[in-house]
Each structure stands twice: as C-alpha cells, then as structure tokens.
Length: 270
Image (cartoon, rainbow, N blue to C red):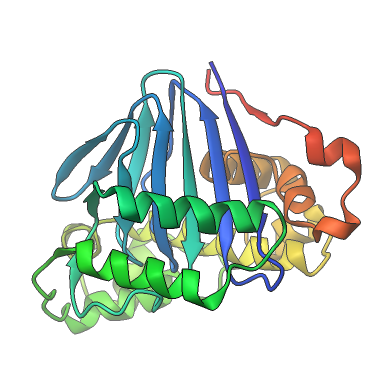
C-alpha cells in the first residue's frame, strides 16, 4: 500500500508542512537543515534514530533537531503531520530528537498546522507558545564534541560542487585519509555516509531550482544526476512525491489549479 504525501507552506515561505497518509512505507536515512516537529494522528510510526527506535502512536508528538540523522517506517495505515521550521525556532542549548506527550503542546501544534493549511501565517503569539513549549519538553543531550578536521573537510567536499561526480576514493584523497578509514570515521561522526549527505544536498539544491522555475531536465543536470529519470526516482524516494507534484503543491495558493489542490498523490512503495 502506498503513501499519500502533501507538502505546503505558509504565506511567507518560512514554515513548511507535510501531511502523510497511508502505511507500509519507509524513508531512507536523511537529515534536515530545519527543525522538524510532528504529530501522529492515527496508526503507528517508528522513528529510527542513532540512539534507538522510537515508537509513536496516536496523539504522540515528536521533535527532530536540525542535522539529526533519522529514518521513518510505517507498518500500518495511519496519518502523521509535520511542521518544517527555521533551525533556531527553539532556543535550547543542546537537545535530542524524541517523543512529546503533552496535550497542551498538541493543541498548539494543531492550531499552527491548521493556520498554514488554510493559507494563513500563524500569529506571533501562537508561534512563541509552540517554541517555548517545545523547548521546555525537548530532551536534553550532551553536546557533541568537535569532529576531527579531516571529517569536517570531507563533509564540506561532499556537499560542494554537486554537479561533479565524486567517489569515496577521491574524497579520501582530498582530505588525506584512506577510503575505509574515512568511511568509518565519517559515519561515526555524522551518522550518515558521504554519499548520503551528498545526495541529500543535491536534492536540497534541486528543490531550490524548482522553486525558481527551472525545467526538470535542467535541474537534474545542474545537480549531478545521470538523467531526469534518475533524478525523479531519488526525489520521490525522499520526498514522497515526484518533483512535478511537489512543485504544484508548493505553488502559491492563489495560483493553484483546483484539480491539483484536490488531487491525492500516491507513492508506490512496492
């Protein structure tokens, strides 16, 4: 069974929404530059984190700080909703991804989400309440120690010059490590491989080009994909919809065609 995935944004383009309906689906391991807050409305979801799996049921909220590797799995029909927020939305010095079970937080989350789905920007007081409550409920985490210099350099190289083809051996040569040592150190430090980070950066750049109105074939070429078909498969696997469907969903509300606004987009997970 597939997932139906709907993306949206507020009037300013600052806050994003994602609504996922369905089940029996999974996402690849990935991170976000943004802060992710969400809530499960029905069914169950499993959030895979480095620290262990988190099982989420109806009414459970969750928070995923920026740059936190994670993946999703759904074993049954259900629905969850996500707010995509600026990285510094919550002022907490150090905190970890995890579960939120608090009825007052759920009410504020629902109010913010409803505003955006209706095409309105939430009132500042409502956003402040969500920020403060999330900060108070977020689990604390030890500050990560600074990663070794070569690993920082490897990440900069991995997410730079995305139109180039970059293999692990070449990346290792640039930072002065053996490929096997770099792979182990990189994975231990960042929770992802260089290839996963690079793919994520390419898709992030692709979304920016799509919003600027670039043709899909040009987007694929500019972000280093072999062809448009390869780009579309990678985009759908991470975002749950095709690049074209995502572009229509992110179109300003007043410019959307009614047929697209009502359309249910299905991700084939077979």
